[in-house]
Image (cartoon, rainbow, N blue to C red; front, side, top):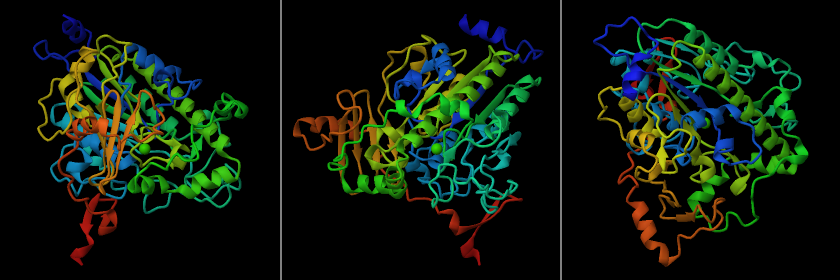
Length: 488
Ligand SMILES: [Ca+2]
């Protein structure tokens, strides 16, 4: 009867009585937001009132992990329903479209089944070649806050602007590119992500004759961490808590883990040397709260719309972010800081709302979940499992969640443990209950061999070869076609 109410209140209206309206989907994605979110408790004092109110009216998955700990493979897994180990999309340099012919992404699958698919901002990876327009009925591309950095080959839709005299805003002079933070000389409404928020407002005001699958992607809190002054003022520097980073933090990490942690180490070392660590943490917090405000504006648009009662809302981040843990800034590691992400589902199917689920889940589960919740036929190509049992019953059992970074490096989470095995055989085992900062690698403890064996069973048996990198192709943006360079 819950269901009947839900269909009766559907906002799409005027459809024949014989064909009940399917629910709409509104996905709100953020970029590089780790668990420093109020309802996840990762940073006491962080201000995320809007994400928290969504968690209160929906289901928070408090033990959710990305399929891969960096933008393109994480988003590709979410939108294709395929893990990196079966798609071959392991990192940011691999175009998914030519590697996965015939694969239907979420918007394509929903369109095939009668939905209107629409989106704005950073949804799939943001570089040209990663977000084919033929997936969508309509799409508004990302608007960047640093157009001076967005070179034409990667961002052909961006109008170039000269480098501002104040660049870099963080005062670290010799790093060029995205690794920057600060307050831009413009108002809140002029920030690039606000164009995606505006888009959501306009979209939700329209009368839709079909159910919709809409995906809004916010860039924040991804670098460059730019936000209005108001958000920096919320986190006075003298009250910033730096992450837990013992001197010997990397001593018990196997070689491959050390290699992952060493990527872009020079940026962390420079931040520390220049006395900017607190500034960087402040900027990240400011950008989280700015993102939260934009999430709140989108939720307000939904609540004021005809679709308020018949729309499934999904809030997710594609991966986490280190702020010095394991002497690393960025992501691309297999620790909690990179893999643990916010995930909330709210709307008609959620029961026992306001109660978090602590079972491990993966972003690769979203595709089969949304297909299930909207009553579409299951897509047999999906690797993940629907979250419906957990949405309906907070005690439903669940398999461990796996995060993969490059072939044969897998990290498995259950409710207590993280077990990682790298391709060179190096292992880590952390007790997340007694050691939430993952400081004590217990993999060598013979008493825990059975824990490792059990979690290893969740690892993919095989990792397919990595797909070709984009340097292998000539990509033509106007026709959105890829030609292998070997064709010469
Ligand atoms: Ca990301």
